[in-house]
Image (cartoon, rainbow, N blue to C red; front, side, top):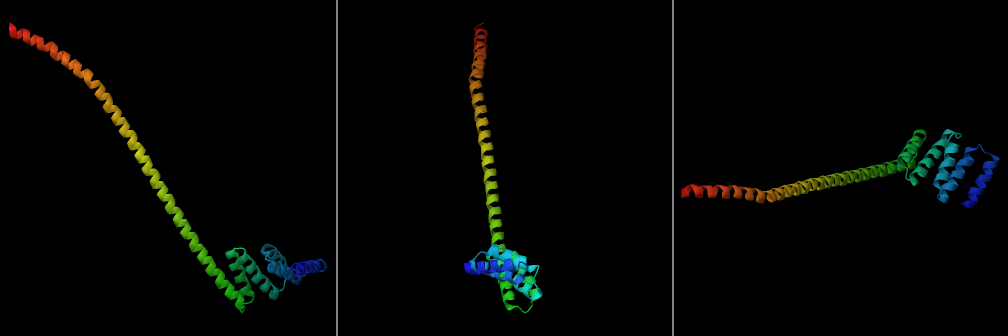
Length: 178
């Protein structure tokens, strides 16, 4: 196919505006597996081609796009080819296949999006739980500190109460003795 590419490139030099040469060059690139180069040649030929060749070019553009994973573009090209050549059974088959692949790709993407949304929701829930726990731990620490402060003050208060009771108690004894 490398020799074919070289031959078609030489042919392009002789007839740069010949869409058939560009079409053939695109086919050679396609067979080599260089789908972007094939697509480029088909696209250049498209504007110069007659209706019959345009249908073939659009079909091949669909194939090139499909091979590159551009399913939506492949579907559009197959549909355009069928507008020019509605009887093209290969274009019909490839269109149906590309549409099915596109549908599967979209369903898979939708499932991935749903999984990602669920993971994000789970992460948000976990973050909220962590935040709630941290707030509760902080509140518990504050409560413990307050309780400790109260306990630290209670003995002093008891001492004052005991002193007051002791001061009052001797007075009662003195009153009792009189």
